[in-house]
Length: 226
Ligand code: DX5
Ligand code: ZN
Image (cartoon, rainbow, N blue to C red):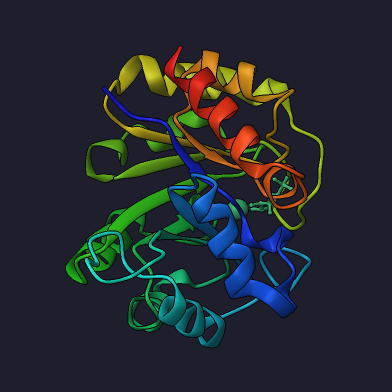
């Protein structure tokens, strides 16, 4: 059985107070930190890179770190062309998982092998226009599949319910796979994603701008458990 994992997207944080903002959502029950890396080529936006992840890693310990006060799994969503060029640098910066986009590579199986050779988890994302079938041959080698529920590029967009049939298909075929949804998730939309079978929930705006992030996070976990 897969478990609910909530991954606030730091894109919605206050970057001037990134460390404190992350501590706040971890204290509120966040399991992962979702780190959106955009290169201005694969998507029409630029966000952040290794230096910021390296700094953040110093103030947020690894999940198995016994001494750290705040710990989280760093889930790096790589919206970049030529993702194979970045694996080693992001591992050094502190990534726990490297999610590449199916649309950006000619040889996804080789890329999965490369990511795993560094001892971190490998995941593959598909844009809304990409059919779910492309994941079938990769799924046995993946730690997670990411079904985008908005066009990648920006936070704060509207959830696309049509994507839920992809999640349903994947869940039916792979009962133990982590299935992530990303874009427009919050208290209103989580019931659709949870019912379809998603268990890893990215939530930027809805968590970072909430008065009570713990309430939003526990609500979402409960929906996934139902
Ligand atoms: C979009 C990013 C998302 C986004 C989610 O390209 O991959 O992770 O930041 O933000 P919200 O939850 O605000 O839609
Ligand atoms: Zn993302």
